[in-house]
Length: 188
Length: 193
Image 1 (spheres, rainbow over the protein chains, first blue to last red):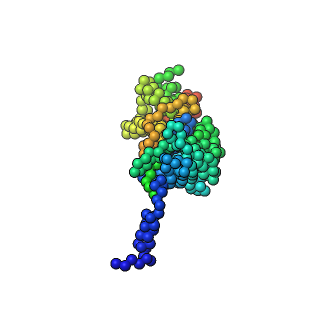
Image 2 (cartoon, each protein chain N blue to C red; image 1 turned 60 degrees about the vertical axis):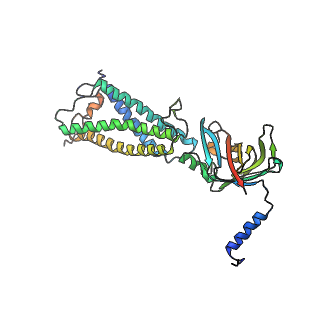
Image 3 (cartoon, rainbow over the protein chains, first blue to last red; image 1 turned 90 degrees about the vertical axis):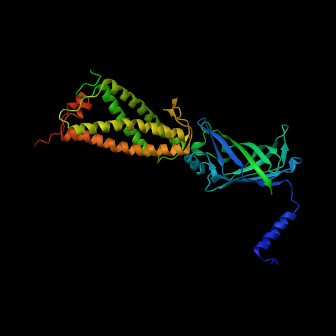
């Protein structure tokens, strides 16, 4: 059987071969299924939680060299789900995520620090609603065939104009929103 | 003043409860229909709180009213009223009591299951939740609240229509015995030449 280099199958095979041949950095990972990205806040003192159903994570990480690591997370803001349709639709409006204009948020970090308690910290940048501000992610790393990055961050919503106008009162909705994530990873 | 209900008319307590609940239901109904059109921002949330608070108030009043009726009794049907009419009136009254109970309860359940924010009665007293947040339950309770409302509107129209019919067409005391004496003094419109 002769393989024509012009067939799509051949091109795909060639691409796969190239990827396989590349000096695969063992520390490059992409997000696998079972990952979660959640947020928690309060309204009038009452706790509510939500999660982003769709987000995508790419990590480069070697526990021996955290300073060489990097992280890139893209979050589909329309996928925010809090268990209440009214609240979810409000989150999409211009007062909150303004998903019509800013469909995605992005968190990027390069160079992690090892903390004394064995965790790591990333001094990254969150781009949300057209605003870029530093946000620190603290995380643990569990090695394995599918390593797990479990992290927490605090985002000051008003820095990004999330919940402006009528919603800006921090007695009603606190400024600090707690983020927690558990990303299951697989080698790229 | 006779507080309990004599055989031929409603006493003061029953009248007060009847008319205050009627007025509250009218107010709550109008607010309920309008508030869905308001912008969903905290500036207008007091309207929702007012609707819910008045509804809980009606729930308390109707429980009081049922209790009072059990204690104080009800006047007998007017002499000359056909048996089927008396029966239909009683059935309507029973259904109205049930609806006036079911409306605030379904609204309360909807509020609880929505879990959007705490509900304080007129901003003063935290009202306990009837259920944990649950989208399906919230949606079912909301549907029930809406359908029961339209059923209530239909029954209230029938109830008020019957009262007005008795008052202006049949010229009997059906409506008058739910009115204070000084209002009762005013006779129905005369069609005399």
